[in-house]
Amino acid sequence: MEIAIISGKGGTGKSSITAAFASIANNVVLADCDVDAANMHIIMNPTVEEQSVYIAGEKAVIDYSKCNSCRICTEYCRFEAMTISENKVSIDSVNCDGCRLCERVCPVSAISMEKRDKSRMYSGSFRFGKMVFGILYPGEENSGKLVAIVRRKAKEIATLHKIDHILIDSPPGIGCSLISSITGVDKVVIVTEPSMSAFSDLIRTVELVSKFNTELSIVINKSDLCQQITDEIITYCYQNKFKLAGTIKFDPEIVYAMVNCMTINEWKPDSETSNTLKQIYNSIIN
Amino acid sequence: MIVAVASGKGGTGKTLIATNLFALLSKASYNVNLADCDAEEPNSLIFFKSTKESASEVRQMLPLFEPEACTYCGKCEEYCNYNAIFLLPEKRIFRLIEDLCHGCGACTYACKFDALKETEISLGEVGMYRVNSKSKLVEGRLRVGALTPVPVIKETIKASLDSEIVILDAPPGTSCPFIHTISKADYVLLVTEPTPFGLNDLKLSIQIVRQMEKPFSVIINRAGLGSDDVYKYLKKEKIKISMELQFDKEIAMIYSSGKLVIESRADIYQKFVKLSESIIHN
Image (cartoon, rainbow over all chains, first blue to last red; front, side, top):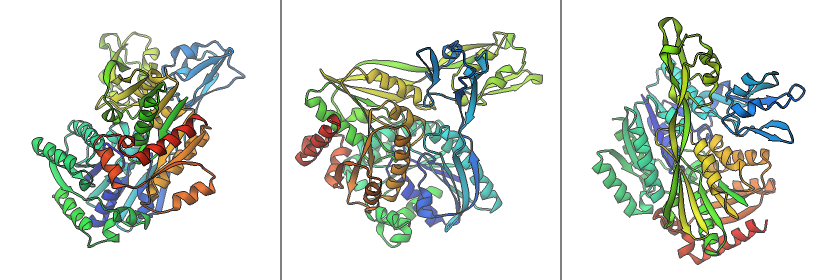
């Protein structure tokens, strides 16, 4: 069973909660799919057993010994990557999308593609089972594809080691990497918090998730920071018949657990927060 | 001057900083625009009373298949660098996997038989909102279900440039949406929190802004919650801290309810005055 823990808005506590779930479930495959800003390995300190290179696309480069400044490439590029100054064509590597059309249209073969090969995928063991995480090299692209590869690896490991549960820590937002992290999963858990921003993001996230045939649960973190909005979110869940798996009060110990590289359930196992998280996890998987 | 407010990690307080800075400058009669570049989850608008002036749709091209003209030669499949075209010539099957298509036009260029025309899909919208006579908020909003916010972000920034000062509320992460926003900025404010996750993601963001040779400084939000590792790191790297906001439940509650912190907290107002002076005179 694949469970994706997501949140439209960043910083709602998604990763801390995913980490807590891993320690509650025990024997899981944990897939850190927030490949832009992977964090789970900081708490979990896994032993890496395997790593592979991820090619995050290509970028066009010009060989000026061949370029005759005919500018045909500039007419075809749709990503505003080709600029001309003083009769010299240059490629803006930020805008280049790696489509290769400029290379194909160049009559003198002056353009070639350079691979982006600094991103990595790691897998290994940690204290609650197996772990897979992707680290996108800062500035490299195509994070959605890396997410898909991390999930594929997590499934392979789960089958090989006969592990039932895969927990996916997803990226924020609702774009390609998030879509890639929830496509085809069994359950989606949205972690939100009581702020107008998070509520607005929750509605957009729910709209996206409802396009997929998956079971949805909602968790409200830091619920006491604004009780009024918490109540509004609860009403919203009730009216739309969304499963509210639970609410968690603001607890600075979650931060201190992280500082000590532990999950909250390891750091303060008998605290109210840890007990609430156990109930929430059980409510989600059942 | 274009100032990007950014952070690798989500939820560190980018929007808090961007909206309060914008409000302060707009009240001080600067010509200032705020561009909400977090097109996947735009939130800046929540904090302002504004009137919508106009909106424009951002579109992406998609190939449109004309089966009668197709010879199933396979050239389009070969030219597509995103694996978005799936072809079975012997069964005369052509499939476009829309989610993988970037609308680059390589397939239509490849086709010599006019079997691929083009159509457009909507990626989202850029909305222009008037806040007062000298300032407006430009919001990029990705259509739910659309994959890439990058074209929406590019158009949002373009629409916000007609002002002396432009503040960009950047999307989280360190990949394409973040890079595209930062690339347009003259100065970057990186917002972090003193937690291990915050520090890890701050280091990634710093790596990028340094590669891009952008001047930057760091804002520490929720100071006091976490550890002092971020301070040690910034000291070692000789990176300037341009503002520090203590963790304060009241600030969290003001922000939660969609209000501007500078309007109800004089101490925070003073901090933003200093911040704006340090940026403008930078």
